[in-house]
Length: 107
Image (cartoon, rainbow, N blue to C red; front, side, top):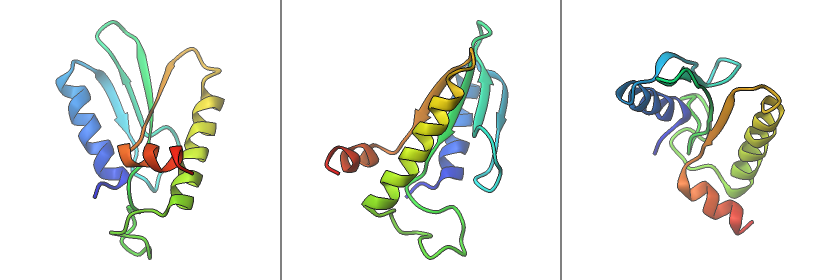
């Protein structure tokens, strides 16, 4: 089960291996865009990451998959945040666990 911090770590590794530079990333406890990076052509990438479970060990949901309602809420907030940031000239991408999309489709 991947939490937001682990997905962020894995995506940073992927970006490093694929010639992205100026990579900045945040932990789930920090506010802002989760990952910022620049590709080899200078194109900026901003990523809003969502995990499958809580990243906080003290959370009741730690180690448990989010419920359908929680997924709906997390994705809605991420999409809204992404849409608000789309006014900027940089690119946006939203990273979600695949099963989130299946749950949302059936919601």
